[in-house]
Length: 190
Ligand code: ADP
Ligand code: 5GP
Image (cartoon, rainbow, N blue to C red):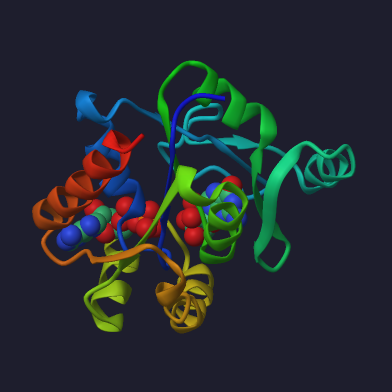
């Protein structure tokens, strides 16, 4: 398998998707996005087969049983997210470096699995109040969902020391530049 693996994890609302969109515009990084499977419903503007493979809980369970996932987590009660083996093959076989938007536990597991072939980056919010503002400002989730995500954020923050690198997403341009530098150095290594 060719290509390296970049893991980006953070509490929901920190800015992972925003940062990944910016990184994908940098052709020198040669990134391919790992499209996860999830049993959550699509948000407005999300496309099946682009943002996620949207499947039912039943199908998710069947695919777990068939051993189709490299890793999966029940990130929120009743909602699964996972990385399909076929997805890693699709991106890595194309010669690109794979970038994953994945929860903190999944991020730690994938790093353990791939070792030096993977760079794990923890994106941290500048603070909990700002995180709440971003989640509300995004305007994609109802109050119950926002609360559930904020309640989990403190626990998720405790995983930061297990990552290769922590970057605070305060000023977006600065955070993107810092991550670009880290990825550039990492992919240049043999
Ligand atoms: P995640 O993928 O981590 O859940 P998003 O990328 O959806 O987070 O970002 C959540 C919200 O925060 C979005 O509305 C996004 O535009 C905004 N956002 C992301 N990064 C920043 C930043 N550095 N400063 C201000 N707002 C940001
Ligand atoms: P969202 O619903 O906001 O798109 O994602 C919720 C959480 O699920 C985020 O922390 C995101 O990184 C995580 N996630 C997305 N895809 C995967 C995956 O394939 N595996 C795991 N473990 N988590 C994922």
